[in-house]
Length: 193
Image (tube, rainbow, N blue to C red; front, side, top):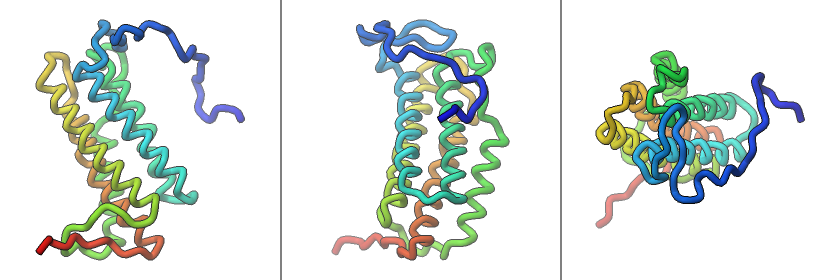
């Protein structure tokens, strides 16, 4: 199968340069693999992977297409986070338009859902349950980026945190939408006696 995106290139999978617990940043120094910047973009990569699992369970359609777009956005966001000075290296790829697109999608899908009147539990059909998992991983990615902001003097664009915050809201709404499309009700949280 031919690649769908222009500009593909060949990469060697292993380099052996990280065998001692360090990795190189794009346009920057080598750092420990547990550095805050690595934690931040590593968690974004984990989120992207969970969305890949979601897509493996979705039928082709609007949600699948949207999740594919989100995966591409997250790859760009990871590149931005992997670069100590993204503006100097051309890796600032997530901007206000991406945040507005998330907000538009939230509004569009939420308009089709019954209003929430109580907390709900993660679950439902497999794709919805995975979207709930993606939401939780997204919140962790957001926390890792906030930690990075406070741990470095390198620039971290404010819209990175905003994007992840909106994305977690969208993933919650998409989980509900996927359950609704499968004719599964939200699972209400029942306060323990």
